[in-house]
Length: 425
Image 1 (cartoon, rainbow, N blue to C red):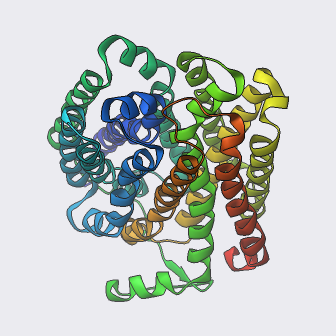
Image 2 (image 1 turned 180 degrees about the vertical axis):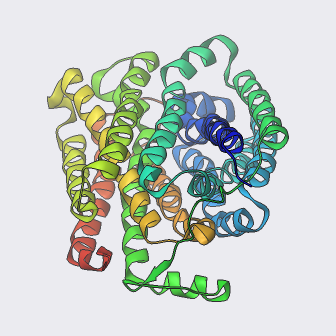
């Protein structure tokens, strides 16, 4: 019998699950953008070039992306708690390998192991939250999770630059590995997987109609939907460009444009995740309580992001530091809004029992976008002379124009197909 005491304990535990998963997710975003701050340190340590740095940084994204379907399946099979705990142990090991790396190749390997480990957090978190929280709460909870992640992105800017200036980048990653190990043990020993019995079963809409489907048909039916590929394309372009800028080139670019030092540039870069936190949190609440047409919201945000890239590509110096600061906050807020809007659309069209594998199929898109664009932009910067020394701002024009073009094409193509995102009710 499900009594009030049991219900109260369940309510308490769901917030424990949210809290622990959010603290672990903090490091997902930390690692995603930390390379930007230590880019010059890595180039000097390993005597490498921009192409090698871009490929090293992209290893996180490639490994993260390709494991997502497996992580989704294991989240459905083993439960979110086990997956998050075990994969966090792997991430801790990756931090140690990265900190000990004697060459850029070993650094790439360590970063790949970090990507493997943190790749087992977001999908099982979505699975767990679909069990512990009601559908009308989901966009809000997703926004809060993304906000916690971007706290990690904030720490990976000026705070990390300050820590690295004191301890060095190697010791810093040893400490990060130790904290990750502690959180992994907490997840394994203190959390449990549980679905409140009063939560009603849900249905899976396919091609706009809600029907029940056996597990063997899930993969095919998800991949055949135009809706899936449109959201995947928006993720690929919208977040591929976002993390290429924030996670790798923002700090050296800002140092070049405004002739400032690393701490000052990383402080500007920190405004992006601050904006993301605001955008994700507010958009999550509005998506649950206010917005009636999330599809229109999604394309409005994608249009706004494209406009932001026009200013970054062509008018950065003219903006001045004050104008750039405002632009970076807006860029982050748009990213937060995109994330919560897309995932709330996914939640509305997916049964919670298979949300893990569905999310796992979609989640590689933004990660692959980041990996590919980081490698390409690194090669383009190498052709302009590398980034071991501070480049002229004009050297970034080509790589950023690539990002702008990617977004523009995505907006035009997906905008013409947005009717497929509408869910018949």
